[in-house]
Image (cartoon, rainbow, N blue to C red):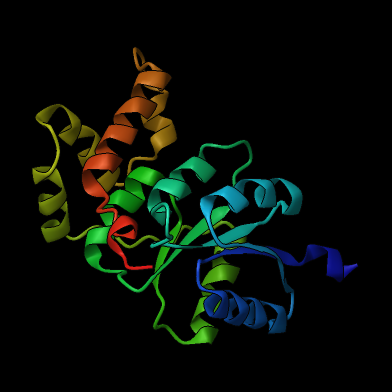
Length: 197
């Protein structure tokens, strides 16, 4: 019976060795199973539909996309899984775009395997593990936005859930989503396109 309660994890990374390593780690953990993998955004969509993961471990720097923008697409779907951004560049400046995208955690690829497994467990039970944004990172992010977009980021940084902001009287959900897309575009430095190979 307990077998059915396994946390289902989908691994998305464009390096086969990284995918294999993360899958092996997940499968070795009691109560967890790697239900699928994808190397790019195009493989990701069908994998999400067929594997129905609880948690997606998503590389930040894919060949054709960045993980945070992909994470936002995943989180906009019906009954979205938890999304963990797995990055070699998990600095404090990733927190602002992660907040806007609605992802649940940003983790450095250098962390010990046991720590990664623990974070997946905590996400699976409903925790969100994004750190509070530092004043330095918030100011840096606000400077990159148009003045009209700054209050929305400020509200998210103060911990207001997006669902609450969307439910405010007079808020047009589509206009809000378009604004979030615009903010994310300004904040995300898409390193994928500049990487060799």
